[in-house]
Structure formats: C-alpha cells, structure tokens
Image 1: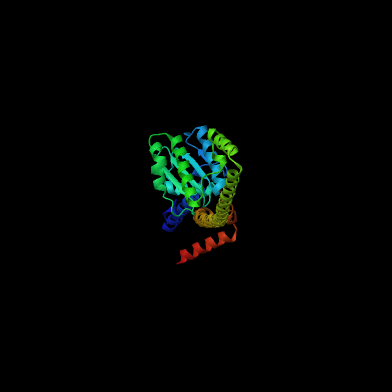
Image 2: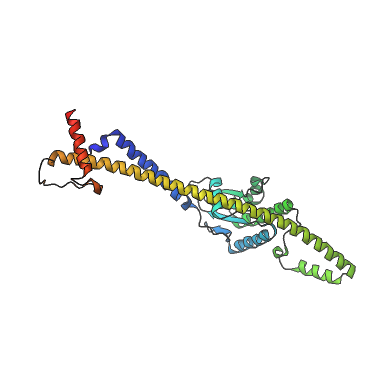
Length: 308
C-alpha cells in the first residue's frame, strides 16, 4: 500500500512497535518470578529439596522470627530465564515481602548459580563468604538439601554476634538428653544455686528481651519504610503503564487516521464524482464515514493540492 511508502508513517509504526514491546516488558517482567507467598519461606520450583529440609527451614525461621524478627527464605529454580541472579533475587525478595532483617537464598539449579540476598539492615554481611563457606561446597556437587541446611547455623551465628545474644530460643533446641540432663541437674542443686541460676536467667532474659525489642523496633521501622517504598514503586509503575497506554493509543490513532485518509482519497479518485457509487467507502474509524466533515476536509486538501 502507498501509505507505507511515507517515511513518517513507517517511523510511527516502528515507534508503535517499540513502545508496545517496552510496555509488554514492563507488564510481564514479574510474570517470570516464582509464585511465592509471604509466610511460606521455601519455594522449591526446581523440586530438589526434601520435605525434611523444608521442615528444618521452617523450624529455623520460627526461631529467627522469635529472636531477631528475621527470616531466611529459600528458592530454587530450573533456570533464570535470562535474568541476572542479583536482579532476580532483588525482585523476588520484594515480591516475597521480605524486609531489612531478612535473607533470601536463591539456587539456580540449571545455571549452577547460587545467590544470597540480604536486607538493608546488614551492612557488613559478606554474602560471598557465606556462600563459599556454607552453600557452594554442597551445591556444586548436587547436594541441595545439605547446601540449604548448612547455611542456617551460619546465619544463626551471624545474627547472634550481631545482636549480642547467646543463641536461639529453646524452641530451636531439639528435645533430647541434654534438656533432660539440664533439668535434673537444676532439681539436684541446692537452694542458693537455684536462686543464683534464677537471677542469672532473669538477667539473661531481660537482656535478650531488650535485644529482641530493639530488633523488633528496627524491623518494624524497616518494614514501614519498605512498605512505603513498595507503594511508591507500585504507583510509579502504574503511571508508567498509563503513560505507555496513552502513547500507544495516540500512535494508533495517528496510524489509523492516515490509513483512512489514504484509503478515502483513493476511493474518491475512482468514485467521488458518482452520485450513487457502486463501492461504498468503509472507514476504519467510524467518524470518517462519507459525508462527514473529515471527508470534506480530505477533499478540500486534495483539491487545494491539485490547484497548486
């Protein structure tokens, strides 16, 4: 068609395709992310983790949450679908509603890449060192369960050192002989030792409560800040989508306008002088029907151009 011989029309169409591609990318970028859900901290998309490992991660997270207001989420994927690990981890971290106190272990099984993403509260955390020490020795040989499980004590030690606590709560201690032995020895002690132990326990509990309270406060502040950031990001994305749609509609209108103008002029050259033409002009845009002001302007412009 002659319309496509006009360079500006070709440029408009090219721009329309480019804007459409960008819009599609913006709208579907998050579709490649795993369908994670806050509160369920294991997403084994690659199906490489055992149920026992998932239960162990859940138990660790119960303790991390109680002691430090923190979580360690674990995700496995077959491939990254073209994403860079750090970009994917950052997007997934936000989608999972993880915050400044939290961690995300991402295992790309197909690409043989591991990534440990951490919240903004851990400014001195060396994720590469933790991957090399706890995750990669098992991950590189295909023992994914061990790679996940061995990271948890490492994170626990880091959090203990960071918060100055003596360890996780009793909920993280397996029931067994050590607990029973400790109880028996406490029963066998004299009254003075029991009082001293109680006083020491009270002091330890108070300091742990203070540390936990400060961690909770920091976590809540960070959650509020991140919530505001996410809200702002969503609003920005919504405006981007609206702007892209407006541009697309404007460009589409320009292309259809020119298409109808070219078609009408061609039709008018053949049938414009006939009172009852055999072929009726059917415009793409309904307000371009024969007899409309738009058609009159097209004819006037054509006549004006012919006289010149």
